[in-house]
Amino acid sequence: MEERRMMHATNATNLADILERVLDKGIVIAGDIQIRIADIELITIKIRLMIASVDKALEMGINWWQTDSYLSSKAQESEKEERIKKLEEEVNKLKSEA
Image (cartoon, rainbow, N blue to C red; front, side, top):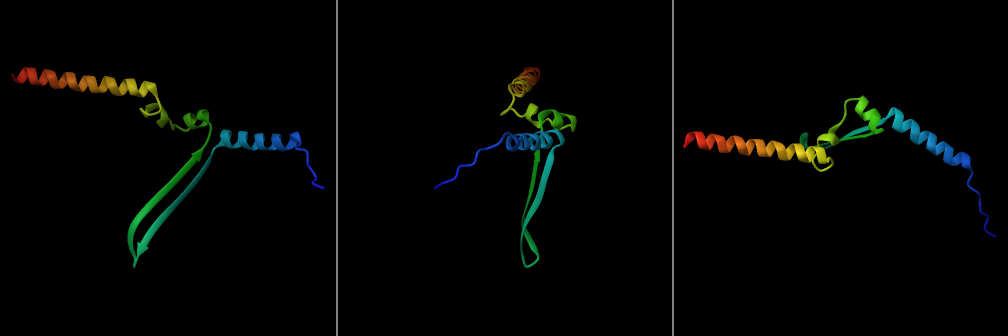
């Protein structure tokens, strides 16, 4: 006969505590992979992974997602405004040359 075990709330609490601690403090995993043949380095791959809450990342000065146009609508607008500004400068430059 198959025995069923009941999941206790303490298991979920422990997992929640661990997740909260990781997000609060952050965790960094780093590693490098190098491929060499006869002491000649062909390729190096650097792997960096950081897991933290958004608040912790901002506290550490990491905010790349705010300026990435694929992730932020504000960044998309800023990028569009920058392109328009450059085009206006080019038009004004061409007008002054004519």
